[in-house]
Image (cartoon, rainbow, N blue to C red; front, side, top):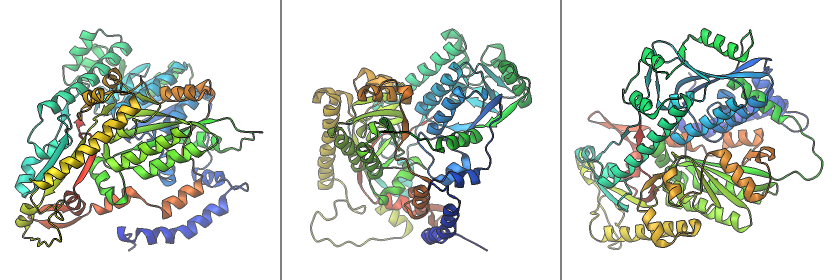
Length: 606
């Protein structure tokens, strides 16, 4: 039996590298490119005439590029908003593509990503090509329906229910559970709205936390209602009545105009071809079409003279970490995506040094995390701007706390109306695990060379000098954060304090308070960047994800480089069981390591 253990990943990669690299080298094109290799793996790509582009959305969407060339080969980049942008824009111009069919299988995306994708779908529809959405699963929720509103027709099967009923925030509070485990949370928050630590320190929401989250929900609700009213030609009172039902059956949805009819998948294809005025259905999947677009892009382009300046797009997604030792923190805070501050900073500086890059668009989708990792990116932006290059931030679903820290120094900030941003503040969390150790029968003996050596210990009292010194540290970090906002946003110290205090805002609310400059998505940010750099018409400017690596660089990086997600996952493997409870070794390590975080609250919004 052949097994691969996490502990031997490095040797597995090296062992795999020799035959794989030989395969790559032997199949590269004579000019040193890698088109031959990719085309060999992808097979002959054929896009038929009079084709219908089929986009099936499922799983987690991300703003940037796929994590690795292997992932892109596997899923075709369908779960990348950047790749979907390229494909939909190309399809709008492609005379072979006559229509778009949308299908949904519980896609996972935030509100900013939802608005970004709906904008891309709206733009495709504006090209004059019909769009049909088929909701063929058991139910469709608010976000799926919001995307479906981009279609000319929304069709379901009779059994599909619409759970289009507004938004609900659920925050799990762990204080009672920690008490049962004998763990005492030590949490300090700057200031009253900085609620990221509340799930550990409290049993329920504080009034400030409740006020801020309700403000987010109200904005999300208003955005949803306005789009339904516009796209389905309904009065606001009709929209509110439908949302208040909680669940709408298929017959109710059809009767009240929320959908246009019932259809099986075969019947949907007939509807699409009727709208496209063509008799034969020729479907092409988004995965196949994306490969065709990439293959066309790899074809050599011979240009004489100096190349025109372009826009570089750098991505920063996920909880922010400052070093590899914090990988598990990123995984625990937000799952798969990890925003490694030093790496993103290097990408920004490299884009700033590139002669053919005129301006940078920095796409941020992060609830924050490490203040040190955040400052590394902020410093990189300051360095690039000092050299004369402009930086425009495009905020996605989250750009809060550390996500705002990395954004505050940009020349211009663009946010979606529903972007969760702000949260200018810091939180300190540590955990006294002495009671937990007593419970499992462990004991820690200590020796110190000075009275202050145990100030960060997880087996010492936090009250007194430890709390006093931590508060002083937090105060300085908070002041640095506010000072950066004051300088970057041209606000007085009092104006920043009024907008700070740890409160999260929607993009629309942040615009009113001067924390962002404009509402919109990536298109708006690119247009702003072209204007700042005096590049002219954005539609005629080259826009590329940065850093742009060739296939060989990506493969060697994947085989030999750091893989944060995989190592973070392996670090979280349960290593012991007591009384039927699985104890996560990474969680224990993190509980014992105090830290000051620029972190927004993690909220589940349904």
